[in-house]
Image (cartoon, rainbow, N blue to C red; front, side):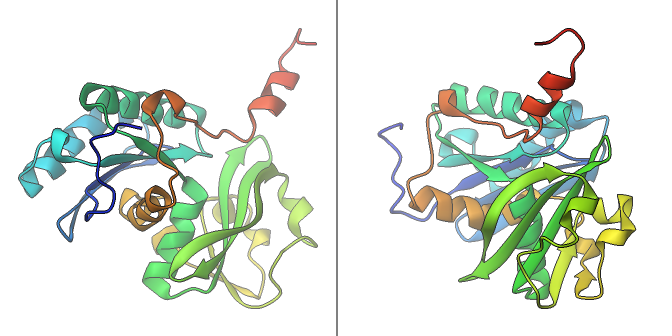
Length: 237
């Protein structure tokens, strides 16, 4: 961990995410949040850095004044996760900044908690190949807290395995791809359909204060399906 960063002071955080169709950037600086978001699934690599520059310019600071970079660690699109992690590496290495990974599923749950006051949230991202990325969260002191584990699975595996048996919010593209996932106990939160960087900020601040920020060479993307995909490749043992 870079020794010149003071995490006891108010944190300046830069958050990035390109793990799904949306590309988003958010900066928390001196009590204000500056954000950029775009539905641009094929333009993440072109859009991300200009968006970073825009929020820094709007705040009137340079990248060297950022304390920590939070990155969308997945799950999501393999290409999107790689773009996010490589961009984070480039930005962090140049300024010797620590980084912290934030789950895309947790970011969606945080949006439902922040925007709708949800107490319990089910999140699902369409993982293609007849599967979804799934996670269930509970609001704890206003923050999304994972219940159980994030996983990749077929939608039909979930019908009898929900952690919650009371009304809960639902968010993510998995509910569009598999409408049967949405049960009577769920209410869909369209505003939390995609993970957005501005909702990563409170999760990132809590993670940093919990000592979870690392050097950039310890950056860890989460694919959930990487082992499964490897096994399915022809010719692999």
